[in-house]
Image (cartoon, rainbow, N blue to C red; front, side, top):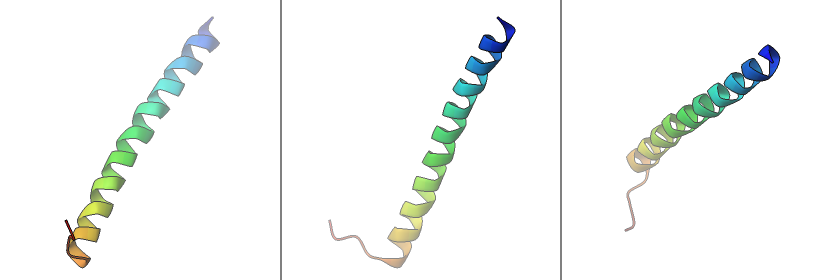
Length: 41
């Protein structure tokens, strides 16, 4: 039982962490893109 609970919590933690990292990376990448290349739209 303990293993299942810990595995689940680790999975959810990884999911949240990866999602947060992805958001940050996306925002940083967009800022860089906007800084170096002017927007067309």
